[in-house]
Length: 363
Image 1 (cartoon, rainbow, N blue to C red):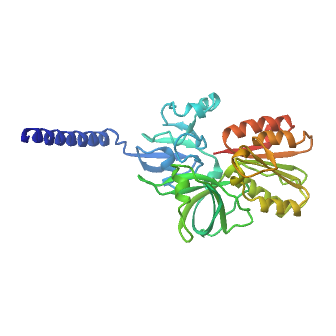
Image 2: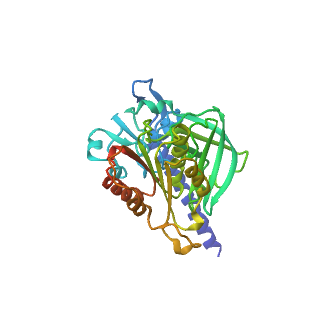
């Protein structure tokens, strides 16, 4: 018995020494020293080598989009690497076109800083800021949806376009991560930001935001996003949303009717069951106040909830049924799951809305 115990202890000790040796070797072999990152024509940034380009930029308060928080799944953190980035990784290939690869475009979250590196990013990214805020209110919208209003404290004002998003800093083991959430409030409310968060099982960001309480501190960066609303009041607006994708549509609709009370706007909002319907009273009130506003809810699983006498089926089919083909100027803004985005784009093209007038975010 003693011999067996002795053998176990020896094996454990040897295993511990082996693990420690591997750790030391890893640190020695991957000690890249101090590396310089030259971004556009600005002063180079000095960073400890070994981190990702995305992390290095964030550490130096250069905030570029990263909807998935650096997991390599969203493709938002594209930068042009002039030199020093190494070969394109297999994890990047699904999110880069051949033209982008030929032009040196890379995913910043997948590029590891191992030597001096030169990159180019869009100049507007330098104006993106980090904000601190207090949770001002929390409201349950549906069984897995939560509305948060964040009152800005430092700085205390934010300027953004309707439909843009922020990236919330989420405390996590191993250091903070960032998750993207569209702003649902109007740009006229510069002292607060409203977010709509769907609880995703196991989701780091949504779990965190579904547990914050009034008075808690929240840090985020922004604004980000490519939604650009036409300032021409004669351009009709079409919003198509699935679930929490209603956030940018809500921001756009609020802003439209603050600026142009007579402007034509149609909202198509797809959810699963009656238990998932929210903001209906608010949108119905706006439709009553503005004759140019029409709203259509569609339930994809109506049989799983209370009786429903409205539209049913996937939301892109509702768009196909109810949106007329027209040659008048129109813009479309889509936010929801990728299959919804793809199906809706096809419908909108058939309704004579050109690709350059279709904007989308898929989360």
